[in-house]
Amino acid sequence: MNKDNIIKIIMLVAFLVVLIIVAILLSYYKIEFFEDHSFYQYFSGKKVEYEGSFRLTNRNEITELRFKDLKVTLDSTPLYYKDVKSRVLLPKDMAIVYPLQTVKLYKLSYFTNVYSDGYDTYIEREKKQKSVQNAFLYDGNDLYFFLEDTTIVIDSQEYKVPALSYAIVEYNKNIELYNYEEDNCQIIETPNQEVIAKTDNYTISLSIDSVVSDRGNQLLIKKIESLNNFDYEGGD
Image (cartoon, rainbow, N blue to C red):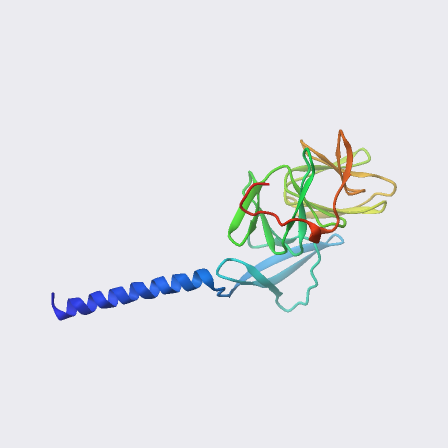
């Protein structure tokens, strides 16, 4: 073997060693970068649009959300992506509620993503995602986010909304109802009227924050921080 070939082999080995070291470092250390997105939200029936950016780690963990040219105070109102179809960002911690049989609640951490592929709805965080069925999200106050097609019943009037829609209910006052497919938010007055949400498998009283079943009403836990964390990879 001549000297040139030996040099080439040494350089190749050195290059491979560097690649391995970089891969190890990336797996152990949070290397941050920025990713730009467009978003929108609704407040009191009015649409507000933002240009912003995530500070992301190499593990796809969102550590910060910045908005360009705007100072925004985020509450639990879902933040919809304008530039990514059927994807929503949760700005605050939320409860995911499994209402069938014994009602179970878990905490979803803020900056969790929810998305739909047209068939199923998924919860996603840090490159981990899980399909969810027969569940909804609750902010511990007045906001309900629907993970499947849902019918809102007010007195005898029905409003059908698809997955990724939400409702904010002020007891004996009104409901702010957002329909994701129609990109339409309406405020409906509800004095002395109970607001119910129904799917094929369960019913929620949005007025009194409870799951309705043949066993009666089970009130939802309002202290989100007291819940066990949602497992983004394992079972329910």
